[in-house]
Length: 276
Image (cartoon, rainbow, N blue to C red; front, side):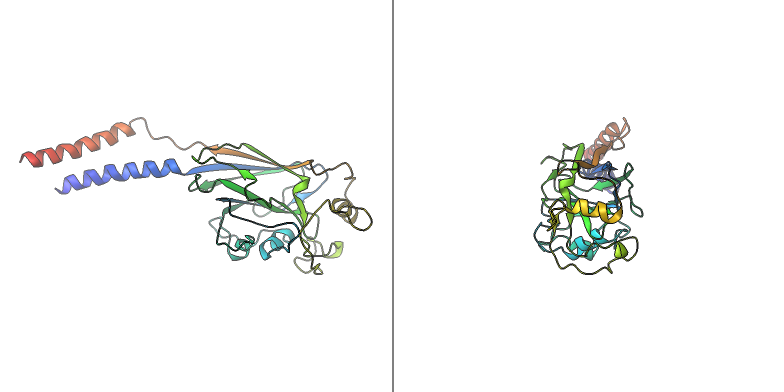
């Protein structure tokens, strides 16, 4: 009787593990900075969620989480599992309790213009965490960041959990001024973190014009001594994100035979015991 129990538990456990492995997946995410204007970006937050992670809205005040993303050159409060702690979770401005499964790309250093960084992330259930959100600070600036305000903008998986997206292009139209800190070279990210003069504003597109008719991108270029950005439009591609599913380690060819043999062995034990 003990042998029967052991054999059937072993076969059942193996089948359960196989099913669990099939439902999860690992993605390789490669971020490329291709803006060509000299802008760097901080390590990029990549969040994977069910479509309910609402990071921000233009015309609204930035949450604490978005303020930190927009002003800090190093991602804050990242734990060893690649999850966001309380401050980052507050980037979900709806307050509906939706949390994203997140990680940072190139944690610990900026990604230069022309540079790239890659990270692998395990998606526990791609039928649930089908969508992605990306946010990072644009450097040099005081409080400029890029991100997708629409949580449904980047659908990576279909309802069956199949990867349907291999490349995401982020244009300059996805760059925003957080409205949290006045642009000032003396208190930019290179000098003083989160200590510049409060702006008390709302999130606006970097292409919104000031009273002099200059947009925010032109103002940044002038303030920080960058090159001519007049040819950059909302449709200019600044960043690319490649998404690739990492092939799972296949079971040995003998594994199905082994599982079948275990099942037959258990059936044989039951039959012998019944005959006895």
